[in-house]
Image (cartoon, rainbow, N blue to C red; front, side, top):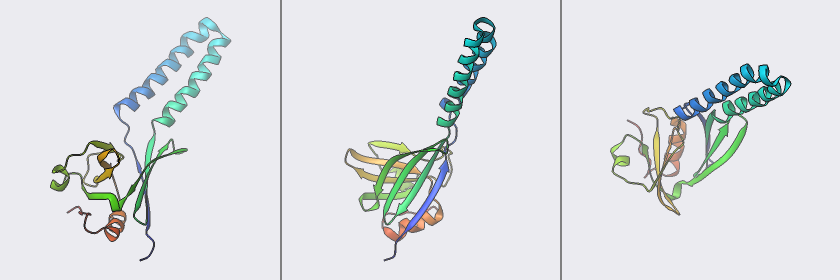
Length: 166
């Protein structure tokens, strides 16, 4: 059996929380600039520059992407913040998975999971899949958006648990 390697990056849709963080950072920075420079002079300008950097960080840390890497039956999910900082999220061994199917399918709705973790773009589409996985903490459901190539590779590794989108 040959080696299987497939990877895919999905950009997370900006949610309400991220939008509010961005708006608040801009609002505070502009408020300090308008009122702080007139009252505090150079201290206000320095504070505005500092808040400008905080606003930049707010934009960076609310821009989220997920990278899925499938290597020989192990799915690795990593979170990328602002296209710069990478954080390892989880490793899923397909040999311990019970089901990989579209999230809207009857197979997924018939199962209950203790934990549900969403690593998809946040869009409600037909390309969102769920992995029902036996975690040490109990049964978990991971939501992600694989490509057809990744689904084919998973099917190649464990054909009995992969249900394709029809």
